[in-house]
Image 1 (cartoon, protein in one colour):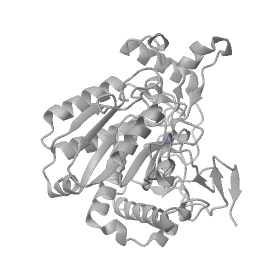
Image 2 (cartoon, helix red, strand yellow):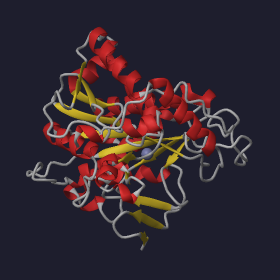
Image 3 (tube, protein in one colour):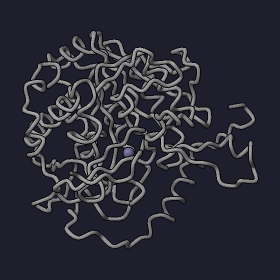
Length: 390
Ligand SMILES: [Zn+2]
């Protein structure tokens, strides 16, 4: 993208005002609260203060501070500094990564690929702070076993605009008569015909230089209730290529089909010890499992080779977490902020420790069925519509 296509950088306060105005339109006061909503967590109170949501500048400052103050070698850098061919967002923002740890196994930790899903950023920065400063045996083990690649804000343009997508502003300049700029869901852009957005090209190239062993991706979802109990779900456990579905069992002899389920079984057991966390399996449309191939972490699992950058076909398993409540629906629940972030930190930490100690690899993958979910009636795909089960 050429410099004249850079949108003028608005001041921080004007950006906040613009975001607040957008929210005001999207969130009429007095919107009906869903039935059975817990008044506290997650909240349907219809007011989401964005003043405490981290901005891009907040993230850069925090990363630089952690690099200065971390006792255990936090290295924060831009993808330009890492030497990537494409290294900035569509609006020209630097894309940031932080590494910590010295283990042979590289772990990819990614948040806020959807700009309006904020707490992956908070959770990963909190985890990075612990990894950089905490001298306890648990964190010693994690730093010894793993090298972490922490991406707290994959989609800075979407985050600043409080929208899911990134926007291809330069296409407006190329074809101004078209009016509306094209929006790209970065989590559907790692496909053979995709890579429309610079963020995708930049992080894909970085992924091919890291060749991680596995990873975690953090998202938000709308409010939902647990199958069977009707309790408000605070955290859903997801795998973007459905276990036992059309795709995952065929990868690496089914190894990821087993390991991803073991990962979530472990998280489910560990987090069940905390009273305030109500979990289920991530499903869409009530009873569909997702099987999307263009999701970043799906493409990692299938070992996508884009532009000849992954000729050896490296692949790695990844699971994701979905915190209930999002800014778009006004259901984020300001009072639940601390708990929402904390459940992600706990989930990531327990999963890291579980893999480091080998407990995850000992779990019974069949117990995936014990995690509350609706009976599966089909697979929601991005390549063949909805595929019914059986
Ligand atoms: Zn998301």
